[in-house]
Length: 196
Image 1 (cartoon, rainbow, N blue to C red):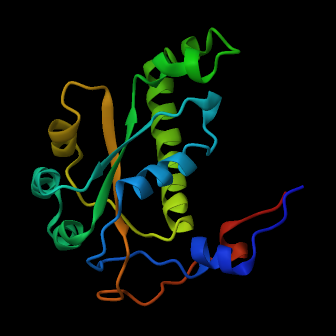
Image 2 (cartoon, rainbow, N blue to C red):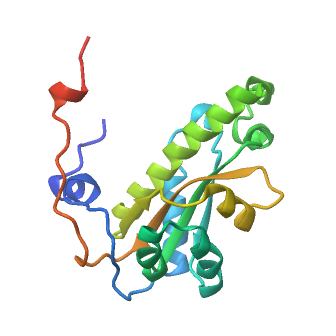
């Protein structure tokens, strides 16, 4: 049986981790970006479908392409972040199932109905984006997840002609305390949960 993580690790992943709105000038290396993905990819998905697709926007050209599609409140913090990840999901994820789920040769047919395919891609791609955040935090990075952008514009700019759709964005880097909001409360167990 695996041992529980210690409090320091749990704090870094959850309890003291904060959504960052400002960033230090320190860059994030390609090696670290790759390490984040290599850790996150092990998170479970339905039938190992792995529909998430990630675009790590780090260059000035990439940021310039992204900027017009951001809401006004998200522009400054995104332009100053070392990395902005576009978390998307591939609606054509089932084409990879012969490789990802080889013990079930008919697995692609499970997702043939468009409503099932779309929901599976969205749900599991969202999960994988959350795994990516936890992997980034686990490797010493801060995160600033956000909505507040034009999905259709981002899709046209970054996924033109592809079956990939954007879901949400996450800035990644080394956060500063500038523009850091006071910690917001969370619901108590009794308000959010039931044991039946």
